[in-house]
Image 1 (tube, rainbow, N blue to C red):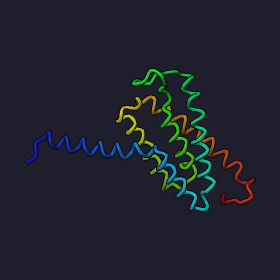
Image 2 (cartoon, rainbow, N blue to C red):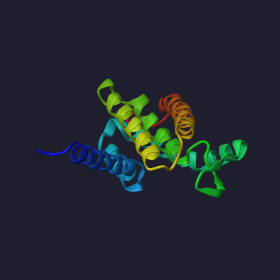
Image 3 (cartoon, rainbow, N blue to C red):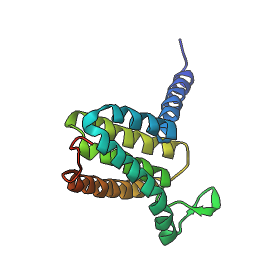
Image 4 (tube, rainbow, N blue to C red):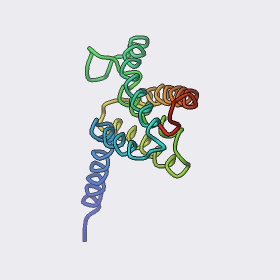
Length: 161
């Protein structure tokens, strides 16, 4: 019979494994895989390109936002924490997809964003307010990119691009 301490340690090990898995959602390999898979779906190619453009724009916008608030990162005095750049980028990418896909996929994308935020916090990279701020700016940016895509989509020579 296992002691209570052994059971708790096993559960903590399981939590660490899930945290390690979800932290890799922000890796460039994962994003590239989603992008390439999206290109195979003829009706979502333009949406995937828009998501990548939104991701790229977040790399430009996030440092500007960090310089506005100038809240130092807890383990580095030379860089700023708010809003979280990783949360901003992931939310900017996935929110474009969220707004453009069917209801069945929206729950999965929501779960991805929540689990990624939890993993960033669990690993100690950011505090919750920094993560939520990053996701807020990413979702707003993703919505703007999605609405821009929908506005110009009717002018594209091929409707499914």
